[in-house]
Image (cartoon, rainbow over all chains, first blue to last red; front, side, top):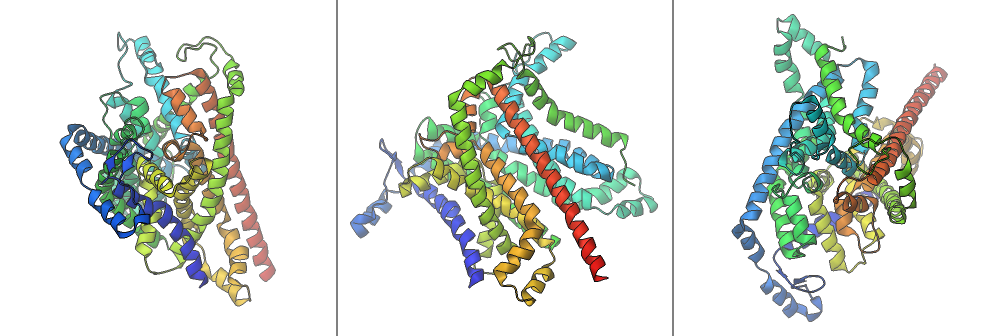
Length: 296
Length: 273
């Protein structure tokens, strides 16, 4: 009885505010836009009973999805979002792994401080951290001034409003999400395994590849999911650092919703984005559950 | 044993420089006398003065604080309950769905969460404002709280709670006087996480707010889209300062609590012996 009560409160909360909203998005993606408040038809009107419900069903159609497939912009935006997310995940891993490794190898008395230094930017506002790069990457910005001063370049590079700026912004803001899970697995790694490998004649490099790398796999996988999935739908970074040629689906959805006020198309964009992400999200959930079971 | 090698020192130095130099530049240029953010023209604190006279920012800060406190408290209660369910309840009907709803919001793109919640509020006919942002923030941050608290609960020796039950505690009393004090550090850091997530959020707040409530990130975003300005640098510096002090204090407090607990355990052991 009490157990059922404790289960039901968070359960019902999530069903009401997480699951049901998706059902509404799905429904709206099959509706037609209208100049009204809210700006779409049909709305489900239960006061007219069964005929009202039948009318409602008959007005639903796949028009918005057909529209999405016919307009090249959307396909390109989905593809380029997945591409940007994939490459930024790879870059974040390449930069994050050595940091996590260095932290795990550091003397014990240093580890708490290093951990704090990784977490601190993570607690600092995302928006502010993206904003910090606007000042650095702009044409008169810090980086260009520095490069001009050293004489590497003779005129400012166009970095802001390009995909390069978007990559820098993503790697920068998502780095802690990659470092923390990898550090967590590396820190638990028993150093005697490495000693054993070296005693058995492994070089340090081959000991790394045959012991450390495979044992850090759960952390690497968790880190990659934590970066890849949200980046596919990222809005703030492409909107502030990217230019008109940066196509990312999160920004398309935002513009469709706030500028064009076409809610049904925005919902259809969201439904397809969700379909793309549903497999990675399920894999992430399974992986997290396994990690928790391994812990207990 | 564990030591700094050249490779490790290099990767740590470069890594932390990458993380901190942009923030340092931002802070330095908030004290710049010139309106041009990239040219240094001498030390000045005038942008801080300007900021404190800006009513719109102060109002937005107040709304943000209200939303943050309310939503993080709701999220902490719900998230702790969800963690208890995840770790303790074993199998029950719909467990996979439940754990899916806990983990999915951690990675769900914010534009989807924001859009779906807005459509929910509209179809319910709820007037949008502070309360709708609170509900939205509580929903996604409870999942973070739940993950933080679960990781403490799985390493928790359940026999302690069973002992309390054997000694005649009611289930609620056992939770209150045994479980809660032990998981308290995780609950507190869960609350802090929920609070900062709420302070930080732009996308979900933009979707779920109405004309009556503007949060600080919404305000900052609309100012920043026009370009870099020293006032925003000053505001960012104040926020970074507040977060830094908060995080360091929290970590000192939990460290001290850990030392205290160890001493109590030591004393209990001596009393036994």
